[in-house]
Structure formats: structure tokens, C-alpha cells
Length: 287
Image (cartoon, rainbow, N blue to C red; front, side, top):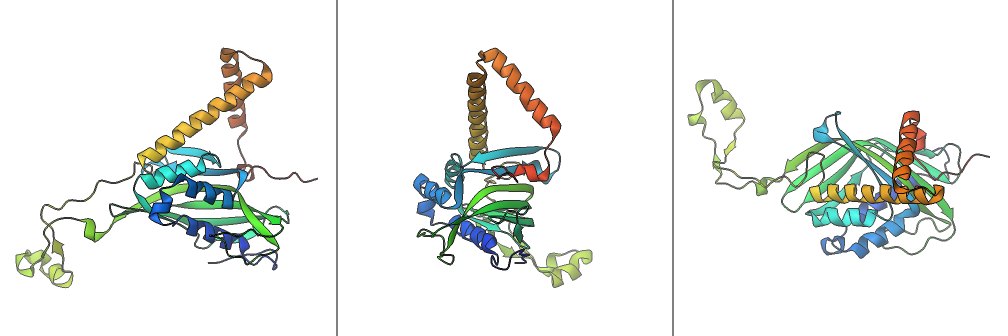
């Protein structure tokens, strides 16, 4: 795994930390079906105000996207609903990731990977890979690292927590284990091939499965289970409603006026646009 480190003291701790995070996503099946497991995992790897920005593209086409912002209060439920939808294993692969200090901050590491892959293996034999650009900010926290079932005690002088993750799942790849293709298999006989196909049949033998059946795909057009999509959409609606209520209380507005002014503020923010760096919030200001 390629790494570019701006400070030789931190020889890839951010990438190693994310590898431990990936390992936590591969918990035992009975553990992954427990909300407590995911609450402990999120508490172990994320800061209380962390944000996971997750963008999904329909049918791997750059035409329709669904961006989500998942806070730490929602993350455990997000993982639980996903595993309840038949996921037996998850794995985050950061091939070619590189690590630097973020914008001069000595206590923030930035990990980028242009070819990240988040792999989901389902109980019905499907394997779904979401691929795209990945960026994470990790804060280094001085002090003794607490004992953990996921993290090795290699850095006794500090601990780490994820501040934010942005994953743009541009493409999705689906595969199916051969054992889950049901049907009576028989070898393709060269004598049954037509004259034009004879050479190919001899050199590239095939197996014929009459009336084959395969499991139904466990994901929707965006590459995730429909139950997970509903969870994210509901969480997004609740978050927006909470923001609206807070905005109404702060400005002492009635419901209708608060809705109009809140919508106007959102449009103004969207009109300004966001720079790549602004996708990572909760950062200290340079003084």
C-alpha cells in the first residue's frame, strides 16, 4: 500500500488505523447483528461530532446521485440495518492510499485514496463492490491509548479518532458465487457445437446449466440494500427537521416563516458552492 508521509515520525499511522477500522467491519456474524457492537465500534473509531459523507450513484452512471451525511448518532444504526439486510462481511480496501498532514496541522492526518473499494458479501452469495474516491481526516490525540479489542497498542503516547470520511462510490460491481447458481450442470460437448464454434468449444470448454436460477440481487440501483437506503433517507429527514426546529427557535419564527427562511438559507449556501477542503468540517482555524 503506497504511502507518502510528510513527517517520518508518523510512518503511516492513519492508514494503519483505517485498516483496523476495516477489520472491525468484519466482525463475527452474531456480533454484527447487535446494535451494541456497532455503538462500541463507532465510539472506538470516531469522534463524537464526526461526519461520514457517502455519495451513491445510480447504476454506476454519472447522472443521478444520492449524497448522504451520516453523523455518529446514526452510524451504528446504519451498520446494523445493513447487516440485517443479509451482509455477512464488509471490507474497506485502500489500495494506493497516501497519507499527509492536513494543511499544516500537526495533529491531523489526511488519507486519500483514488481507488478505494468497499466490499459487501451477502448471505445469498452476492458480492458487491462500491468503488471510488475516499478521503479521511484523522485527529491525533495525545495521551495513553485505551485498551481495545480492535486496535493494537503500538502507539502508547497517543490515540486516534476519525474526524470525517468522504466516500464517492462512483461505480458498483456485482458478482455471484458459482455455488449459488442452481441447476443441473452438464459439460458442453464439442460434438454439439456448430462448425464455426467448434474451435472455440474445443479450446474453451463450458458448462451448460439448463433452467438455471440465481438469487435476487440484495441491493437497489444505488448498490446498497433498500432497507439501508430507507434508513439513510429517514435519518436525513429527521436531521433536516431538527435543524429547522432549531432555526425556528433561534430566530423566534413561526412554522411557515421558519420554513421559508430556512429553505432560502439552504439555497444561498448551495449557490456559493463548496471547495474540496470544505467537505471536511470540525477543523481548527488557523490563527
